[in-house]
Length: 74
Image 1 (cartoon, rainbow, N blue to C red):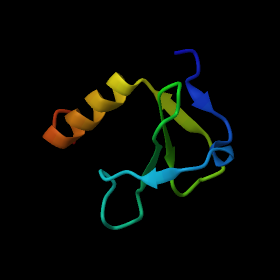
Image 2: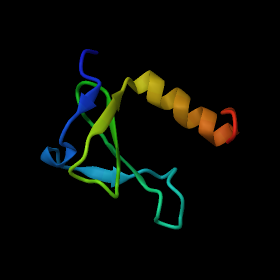
Image 3: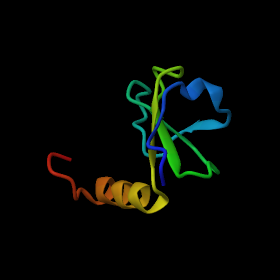
């Protein structure tokens, strides 16, 4: 994968709030399914801001680590 960031993520359509975002609505992470270069992730409070693009395996590992408390300070 050569693309690691998307400078203006508002150019892409189909963002959804991650099911792992908190129910409070203040700290929401949005993800985009079906992006050929990986899994774009952005801050919902900044829809025209940048998105980070993770490999599918990297994103899955991160989500699993968060879900199981496997991250320091999580």
